[in-house]
Each structure stands twice: as C-alpha cells, then as structure tokens.
Image (tube, rainbow, N blue to C red):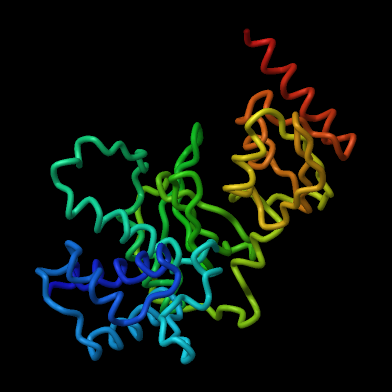
Amino acid sequence: MKPAQIFHQYIWIINTLRAYKRLTFEELNRKWQASEVTDGNALQRSSFNRHRDAILDMFGIIIDCDQKDYKYYISNQEVLNDDSVERWLFSTLTVHGVLADSAAVKERVVLENVPAGEEYLETIIRAIRTDHRLHMGYQKFGTEGYVKTVCPYALKLFHQRWYLLAKNDEDQMRIYALDRMTMMELADETFEMPEDFSPQAYFSEYFGVLTVDTPMAHVVIRAHNFTPNYLRTLPLHHSQRELTSTEHYTDFSFDIRPTADFLGQLLSHGDGIEVLEPADLRQKMKQLIANNLKRY
C-alpha cells in the first residue's frame, strides 16, 4: 500500500471519530466499507490497532476504547485545537487527502499563495535536528544583503510565511523570514541547544513573530457586530478571555505584549474592534487610524 493511501486512512479514522464521537468497531467497519478510503474491503482489527498506534505516534491523538460499551473515541480532543506541528500536519494531510480523491474539483478550490523559501526548510530542519549551525544569506527589504552564521532554534509559520528563530554571533535571538533568504547551507560547527528552551514558551506572550521588548499589558477590546463570533471560533491568542456580552458587542481581554503584529491584526477587523484598555494603547490605535486617514 502506498504511503499516501495509508495517511489517508489515518485521517479518515480520526475525522470519522471526530464526527460520530463514539463508535463500536463494527460501526466503524461499516462506515469504512462504505467510504472511498478503501475498495469495499473490511477493516481488519489488527490493521485498526496498527493504525491507532501510528496515529498516536504521528499526531499525538489517543484513540481509546470504553470497556462499558466497547466504543472507540478520541480521548484527548484538545490536541486537535492547539498550534502544534502534529495539528498542522493533520490539517495539511486532511486537505491533501480530500483534494487527491477529488481531482474534478481541484480547479474550484482556491488556496492562498505561499512566498518562496520552502526550499530551505529541509536544510533548516536537518540543522535543528542535529544542532548544527547554518550559513545563511539574507536580505531585508530595502537593504544590502549579507551572509552570517546562526544557531537555529525553531521554525514558525505565520500568515503564510515561514520564519526561523535563531541566535546570531552576538548571542541575540533574531527572526529571519525564509522568503528573504538568498542561500542556506549546513555548517560543520555544532552548537549546544539549551535544554530548558521552549519555542512555545518563547512566543507565548506574543502574537505573530515580532518579539521586540514590548511590555506586557492587560488588553481589553470591544468587538462589535459579527466580530465576536470570529474571535470565538478563532481566538487571537491563548490568553483570550470573554468578559461580557450584550446584543451589540462583546468585550474580550488578552494578557499579551502588544507588538505591531498584534495591533495590525486588530486593525484588520476595521471598525469591528475597539481597544478599551490600557489607555496608552487606545491612544496609539487612534494615532495609527489617524495616520491612515491622512493617506485618503
């Protein structure tokens, strides 16, 4: 069996249990035979158990069996809602599997463009895996290009762009966009990755990739019209909390470092979002809007 077909079967099992919540093996098998994931062949219990193990290893998803009614279910649904690599991989493979089986509709699915830079992913991931330094050519917008050696710490995907978090020769943490890299090669030298460093913790106080020294703030916003529904279904940050809700608006709070990435995201909602607190951030937003108005 081809790897793509096996991945498709993994995704089918996960999504079927997500949709139906709890199924016996017999119920799952009937849906399996009626689906396009197989040629009508029955799902063997031994194959299902191997698939369960592979799903756990690949996506971190636990498929348990309730001994009371012998129904299978996903016992850690929360992993399907986080920002882990496993969650991203699951989402990517789901879309790939659906489109692969639906060639006739490919022209009717419109995807977002991803800038250049993915050709460097394999080299960067190899460096991260082996703790090797990277020789990197880089050119910021509007400046001269340069070459330097960095210690790769982590990769982050944000707004359809890949970014590398790395420590430079000055022992400073910096963010580099892959679409602005001009060359990349593995260096002979290695570096020691701190055991207590967590990329998730490093970015946890920020929205996006800008990690400048912006003070922490308790931000309160008021979302108008339909905007609250967008924030509920796709929270801007893990610290997002819903405070009060009325017929016309809902207030949300965030404990975050309000960098330009975060402010830009708020502004992208137009008049659907209003910053209430802190006062200096509200004033900053007013100034940004005023500066924008001058261009019109």
